[in-house]
Image (tube, rainbow over the protein chains, first blue to last red):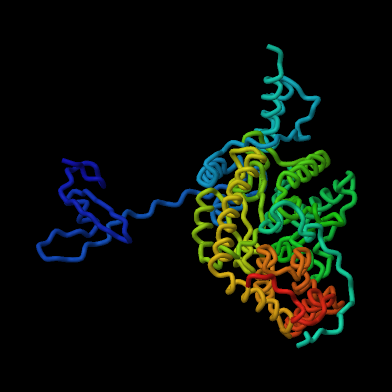
Length: 157
Length: 370
């Protein structure tokens, strides 16, 4: 027998299915928890009470460390605030891109940003990358990471 | 009966953009090809989120960079924060600035060359939106030009770019290549045979977005539709261009079949529609943009099917611009109120289409077989 999904301690003896707005919700409760939710077992027919779970508290809004754009604003309008938002809201941006384009990988022309200074190399680049991450300058960090990968790619075997 | 020709309204000569010449392959259906690239400058907020100071800095950086290199140095910049409303609207009608650029604040605008083939919008949704606009079907030519321009500009300003995501844009749906290739196509055959919706639905499955002549959310006025790629990441620029072109050519094949069907099954009705449109443009004393566009579409179809030879493609292309409100006001050299515009438009059309002609509709030779 299933355990009560509310308390998890007692067997679920009351099984309730509600269809609200074409959404089917099933609940498996013990008698005690059912009563707490206002469900009274009766032979008379009564409209079933609304036993939808309390809405979970909204996740705290996030913001981009660089431009202070809020995730909620991006979700409502679809606009990011600055290039660093791509890092700050990486998961959400990736989901959107994959849904729209079916791909997350740029295969077009490249670009060598002037932000990656040519004089930096090897360990200096690694240090600069660490500093950029600490400063939450993700844009510069991405460029430096690309430069490190470029140098690895061109290093003699 | 003689056409009542107005005295020519000859006030200001307006130079037409290069795409109006009606040249280029498949220009009987494809009016223009446009390739746009979206770019942003690293270290600055995107325009909708930027402070006035940032917008000014970006505007200065881009216009300064343009002055520094070959193609850009011949461009003229229009800052919409200081340009008159009429001038700004005129540039929107020229299809080198978007209507959205009119309604935002701060330093923003457009820079373009004399032919308006190459232009750059600054501080619209992205810091930089550069485009190459050419007549007919010339996507490779347009791509080569805009690619070279982009490479030059990218050495003067620092683009926001990541290896994995490509060029970063305000709306992530434009990121990656930042490329939009769009074809302005004339599809009266599909409209008259009531098959446009079905064809566009099929195109949508192939990743083609359709908009009206006046951009997003506008109708297919004058049987003109803009077809463009939907996807910007996951393939290289030339693949996007080739794939879009391939889908557009399928639509063109449908349009050609529809035209052949109309010619074989409804030649008289088609001819009647064309000459009625010609009559309206010759005699109407007021014209709306939609009415002009629909009549112009009939004449264009007549020209491209050989049923009507009175007017050139270049004149028809010019007509699409000169009837628009800011163009009419620039031409007359004074502000026009909304009641006056339809009247001036009708006069302008007669001046453009009928001034050099005999003035007698009976002189028009109707091709045989009708």
